[in-house]
Image 1 (cartoon, one colour):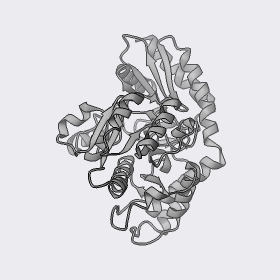
Image 2 (image 1 turned 120 degrees about the horizontal axis):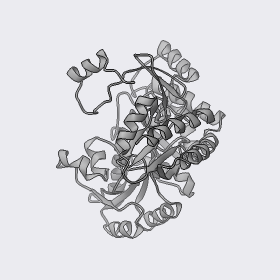
Image 3 (image 1 turned 90 degrees about the horizontal axis):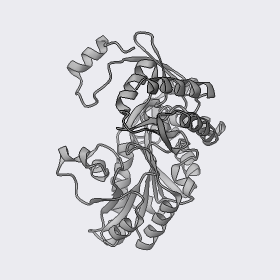
Image 4 (image 1 turned 120 degrees about the vertical axis):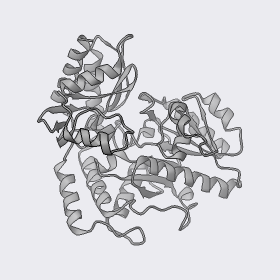
Length: 397
């Protein structure tokens, strides 16, 4: 179905080749579908890596962006603009109250803010050596040097050594290993994802996160929850940590917040947020009017239409359908962030490529598993269509 276009040829010649793109050029999106420059239609079950939770070209979000573009695009954070504090209040309410938000442009920037804030708080309350952060193997926190140092995937780190100091990883869901790491008084924070998205869609059990929270309290370390991929209804709760009935000290988010408009955010409980003083952290574009107008509209729609409920319902349907495919050994994840584990001997990358040719977008999150993260507005009929396409591809594998 994919044909190399002029855009693809220009990309190969003039754009840094950091992605290994497939030779397809998308020119339009509508709801759960993308359209390429040859007029082909694709059922998008990845939604830009869990970004377009309201579907492509959502009319309300498009109108909010267009109105803001005609009104005011940018002033810098030296001045107050109207949407930023409204969005901050809404996020605080969804998380549980009692906190403050810093706005950035991406998930990596939100995590960078979280790391800086944790270090600032730790050094203020524990001394200059208290700047170490513990994360988990298999985690993914970003591609900046600092967030890469926090990422528990050595293969992504090797090329860029030496990375910033003060980071260590332990096995995911191993509370004994974490307890041992926290015996070091230099540790100021633990940074975890409620579901390791890029690590293979691996959910953390509720009892593990509860034990982590108790251990952080015991050792006076902060708990940072990276909700960049899981936040804002994706897992069937507003935030993934809410499945475990815990309260983090810092929460990061991005992806779904702007439904495609670049925006990230770092929320922190008030006593931690106050560790930042004017000049400690900044960004030119973070929280600018265009991005926060989109985010304000996104949050209004999500709250009005009970998106966590939608995600739970759609998850049951998708899980049930995938589980009936003979070549799928297991379905894991939370809400509408799911992985279909294939039976032994099937190459997930080859299956994802064949699905693309058949008009379905998924990705190989591991060599043996496919990731599903569609729009939270996906219909039952679209779920059935997606699984039907996958089943036909797998039957030919």
